[in-house]
Image (cartoon, rainbow, N blue to C red; front, top):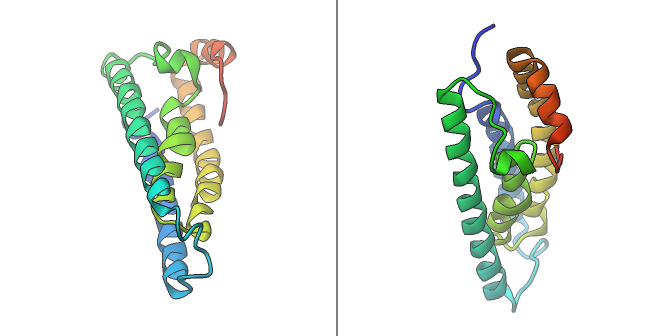
Length: 152
């Protein structure tokens, strides 16, 4: 079995999500006023969006360091954020980071990228989970049972 890269399925999901975002962004620009979330409260959206983006990025960075340490030692990441969330990097990106970034666009149609992102990650994450099960066997099965939150 070939070792999966440190990126897991992230690069595959990002490609699909990025393409979807480009398409809805073009549609949004073509119909500029049709999908606007707010006219007057945009500064609030910016503040909330930036805050969510920064918090999400920091949490993702913490999870990435935990993953990198485990990956370098050819171990399963099960501590820290990985003890709380199954797939914490994908989970935090979908629940905090991406929604924050999407708010900056001030567009309902751009916000649908979140739905596309959840569907895409759910599809691709099965490949990563199959790999982890083959690589780590019962240790991965036990980890999946013990982890507190299983968003994906």
